[in-house]
Length: 426
Image 1 (cartoon, rainbow, N blue to C red):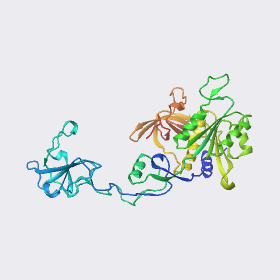
Image 2 (image 1 turned 120 degrees about the horizontal axis):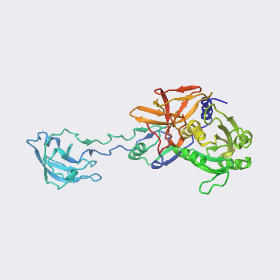
Image 3 (image 1 turned 90 degrees about the vertical axis):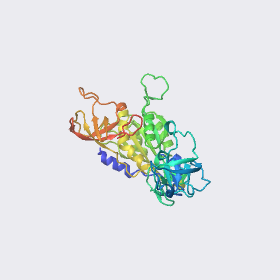
Image 4 (image 1 turned 60 degrees about the vertical axis):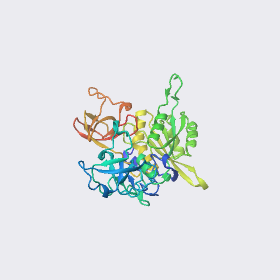
């Protein structure tokens, strides 16, 4: 039996980022840039108005005031997406909307609020005046967004290793890029094992339980931006499991659930002793002490051997999902090209007490609450009985060291779960 830290080191040493692929920007959410990206064009592409108002010459309005406004003649209205046709000269102005190109001759914008243009309910325009009173002076450049002020053509926009999300997609598209090179998402085969398992959608027969592990693990692969390849249920025979594993060898990794303990029918452990290269099969961690990591091989192009990692998770759902979060998650992040695989943790004040009398660290499902940096964590479902919090109600995990205790008011490290839905996001 090895420590959790040693198990994680072995896993990360034997998993690798996928190769780059070129994809449409809009389809890259969650993927990692494989190379530096430079802006193809500046933004905005020309000088544009930052306000709804009037494009004017600063010389014409330098004496404007509330008691003595400057009156200008309106020559046209320009909206975003269209170009001005007329030049702003002495004594004239152009009505202009936010984002519209600044007309020739104008060097500043006076917003509607600083003019006498009548405004209807919630600012709706009620008429287009032929002339307008300007109540304030304006310096050159007022309310104008200069060409290239947000980004300049050719500048470094993002570096390799950047995780792409909505803000990055916006910036990439704005800069003129529609395809980028990203690290390919890992494709992971998912196999549930056990004669007792039955697929969803049919009435249970005596002695059977529904296969919850397969869908749950596939969901977690998706949550961490992997691509699950569900291979179904293998019964407790080596031939059945081997057939599933051989199908999964074409993917980047395989996850099995169940069959890793010391029983006569724990076929994952038995088969990996024959067909794979097991690197560990027990970890000092509860729940999920029985967890296996093994290496398999397949032949790639031109007969090159490719290593495929197999993660054998514990069968009990609460233990198997702890295995996934603590050991598989970091591997998936590395396979995606994410530079930092350490979980984001927060300090929280314990709301109740818990004592771990076991000789190994205990991973507890917990409930994290709070905001603005002041967090509180509940360790037990009932303060009277000390019962555990059901995993379906938890939004975080706490690792309690071997033979140690937590008392109310203690500050401890908590790992929020970012699985979506009811997850806690600090």
